[in-house]
Length: 182
Image 1 (spheres, rainbow, N blue to C red):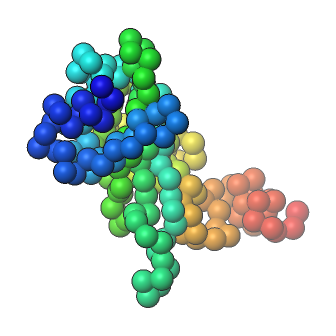
Image 2 (image 1 turned 135 degrees about the horizontal axis):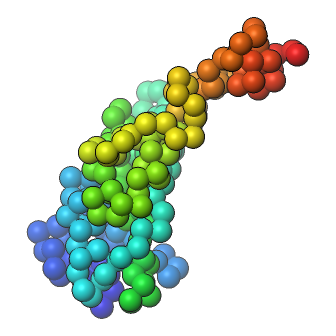
């Protein structure tokens, strides 16, 4: 039985809100954020699924919507979680559409402690908040940096790096990153 079939059979109350598909050798579940913890706990704890390994967690930013409704269809931010089961040799991708204005999801650190740094990176680069994370702070950019440079078109041409001396304002204080002269 496929992973989506097991999820639908064992979590029947969620069947209507959990679209699923198969992509290559990966089962894909689309899970609304309010049901994320329930589904992920099931995927980890059910003996027939046993996704005991968090392979990756990332965010896809489709960019801000265009004005006057001419923008993209669907959410701006898509949380993508890739899991695997070492005992069953299966892989599952869980996708969750996040709120455009306040992209937030429940932390995965309580299920997979290895999510700690990846969630910090998602916050640092995309501004996506892992609610309940034990230590959500910058991990890639230096403290004092502003914005989230992984976001598409939020502030074109603006560097998130804080100025370091000099008048250039770039990451190196010499204008090298922002087109200034040396």
